Length: 210
Image 1 (cartoon, one colour):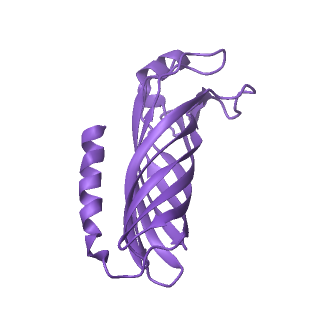
Image 2 (cartoon, one colour; image 1 turned 120 degrees about the vertical axis):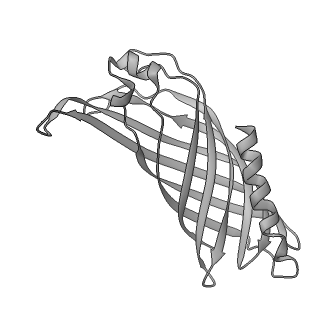
């Protein structure tokens, strides 16, 4: 993970060095982004569910929301706090030769909250950032249309990444984010399968307000 994260940082940080002399960053910004990403097909999880790895969802549709508070602002840079929420869902079901569903569907979720710090480079009209955060994350997989009654296992998970915002108007911008989640292994419970350690790459885009 460290090599890819370093590559992201190297691309993002110099890109905003032009910002000196512009208005400093605002005190507050918030993002809402969407993504369509692979959550991986874990053979350990598949084995516990008695399905093939290819029977697990190949992709998930999700969304992310961030709140940013820039406590220390300088000429062309700012140090801030960030709070983030993520939610994604994938579903897969086998079909027969006529295209009719067979067996039980496989459901997979990714949901969590995290808090951390960000280092930002740019000016009020647009800036890039790198950030790191940690918080509880749920990554359950199960069979059937209804979720188990028991709560899903929850593990504290680190995420690292970066992104940028471009404001076309005083308060509304386009934004994108590239983020790595390093999930931890889980042992099987009575209703949820075990899972290997997994590195997830999430690329998201959306709107930002300030």
